[in-house]
Image (cartoon, rainbow, N blue to C red):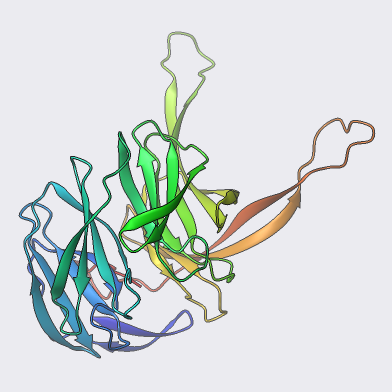
Length: 309
């Protein structure tokens, strides 16, 4: 079912004329055939089977994709050759990578190998991180080191190291959050802390908090970073979309209980305060990412879930 939105209000609900196989999971919503309309990409991770739904309003034309084994992970969907059609980037567990270039029928026109990953690294994201119109690659090692490859087709023309992250941190979204024409990175972080108990012989209770770490990218320069506490309970970040029609991307989030929330993304300059101000030193201004949470429309009935904004 498709919901046509007017800001935060559902203006119309339209059923989509096709039922998905229960084994398929939504992967990406993008224009995979160059007709200017978003299409829905599905994949069964267990079998490697994929489907592309070419959307025409609420009607669907299905295109079957080649089977890509479960050892392959879909790492990103971007237009890599500048033809106006979104392509698919794959990563293998052995470090090899390849691109599927799609055509106007939503089918794979060409498969091409990318340069192998640096030793110990996996492809983490694909996006235009310097505003030149060409997608770049972001790699992450098992230890948390991060590298950016400036790409020209299937080969890098420059390589830069980015700040390290936690070994379990991952990039959840790639989008231009500040309107400067450069894609930014949204990392999801999970941190567990233990609380002390006053009484003796009591075990410490652990508390897990999820954070969002936004990297505002500017080419090979160090990114401007901004961290916000997202939740103290498990949630799923389902996408970035302008929910209230203010020209600014918002977060579409699904909580563990199944409710949906939208978060306004706001960048603020905040003066970092300290207990003692040293003579001759100015207080440092830092960038913070403020989240203002608002309830989003709930699913039509039990058994439904938000696929993508």
